[in-house]
Length: 203
Image 1 (cartoon, rainbow, N blue to C red):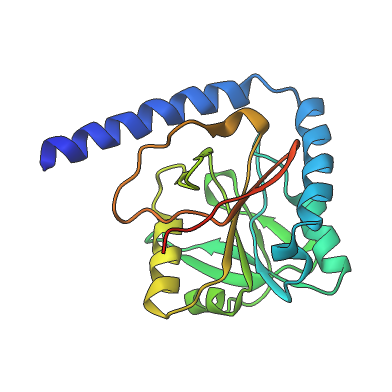
Image 2: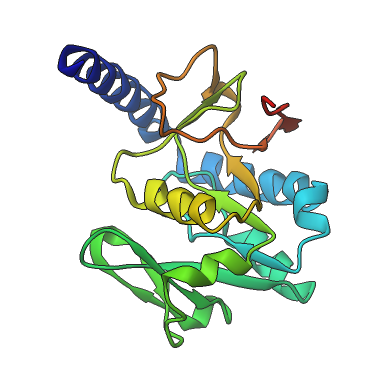
């Protein structure tokens, strides 16, 4: 079993390196253009169009951009929750009040300056936007490996909460297969600049 886990971790690490290297080749202009298209495509997704509360995140570096989407959701009157990284890698949450209310935080992240609502605040979300590096045809997502969103997903499961799970990616990050483990959760939809795709969950 330990060998299997080691092989799985190695496969995930190798794929992460490959995908991060590809992102590093994107120009700032490429990323800005993709963010605009992503926001437009995401806003038409029913999981976001009909949501009253969305748990999201602020993109950094060459991540698929979320900032235009955050502003559009807020402009619609959607309550947007953003993560606040805790010292144990778990996530607290605070309400997004606009770009002027984002502060630099650890690991190059930006976090809201409002009062923390507690890790359980994510249970109020109708839709959760998950950061990721890839997704496959079964909806399995490859994260960055920090484990923060594994905790979020475990918290949702433990509470019996079932928000829609959506990941924003570049077109070439929808891959044939993502190495997955029993604790990994499939997402409900992926949005890329080419459009949105939904996944049918297993019964």
